[in-house]
Image (spheres, rainbow, N blue to C red):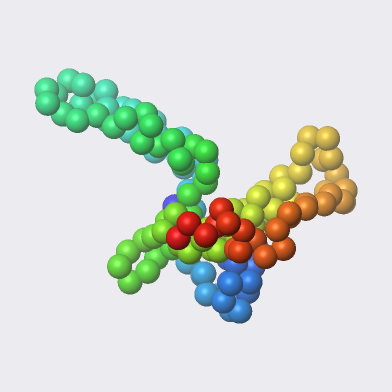
Length: 135
């Protein structure tokens, strides 16, 4: 695991808690780390094939990590994932991650870092959107 970017940590804390350091310690798993761990799991799985009655990990067990980069926050009881955070934190975390990614890694059409782009968010009070009211 590695520390989440300061952009995400500070903005998440400022917006939700009024304290830019509130989410200090937020961790993430990069795609490189995930692929490395996946290769390790595959090699362990091959070894398990040789041992009878050994359970294998299903390919679907890592589906969410392949689709959404996981974020983890250390609490008193251990790490919690973004799926266990409030709906506001979950939605905002994904939006901030998207914005950070777009700023840090511009598209191939606009490789000039001085190019401007706009991100439009449909809901001003996104936490009040019905789809975020699940938890």
